[in-house]
Image (tube, rainbow, N blue to C red; front, side, top):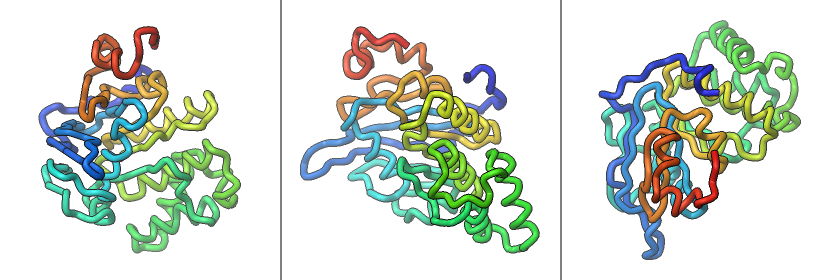
Length: 252
């Protein structure tokens, strides 16, 4: 899929987001040790690793739910370790959780309610809401309550809401989980559409192929830190990634 949707070339001289030397322990048990990664503008970067490797903890620290024991989290050249969640969003950090985080309102009002926080003019609020409905193929669902949307429809609505704040980077926590194959392809298309707008993406998923289909490069976590990084081809040749995650019988 990636080749067909490659629209934007990113510059590799000015990272938009970075984690530098992050360490985190719980009750004396190490979760992450001296972990570092970076994302450049317009780049889609994957995070892979076995259960318990620290992916959830990493995202939790990136969005401000938890603080690292040491290390730095950098957004657009600014240290954000001590910045609370809502202010990180204002700095340009978007986050899509695994859970179905929608209001018990219509599709239209789920969008309009957030648009109103960012646009004061009433006509412009309606215009922006209509634009999002169109862009994420939600027009025919505008009057439906979000609670009755299918998994794929709800995910498109979540992605539309995510883009209201025009983030510089979005963190997507397993956005393709529990979706049918055709729906996965559809959501992949919208993720790449977000990337083509210039927004950087950091994304996790348990399905390696689904992740490699949309990422420019990835990091594999294991042994409390990064054990492999690079393009899908480079990672699949990594002896450490094979030993600690893929297994010797893995085939893409």
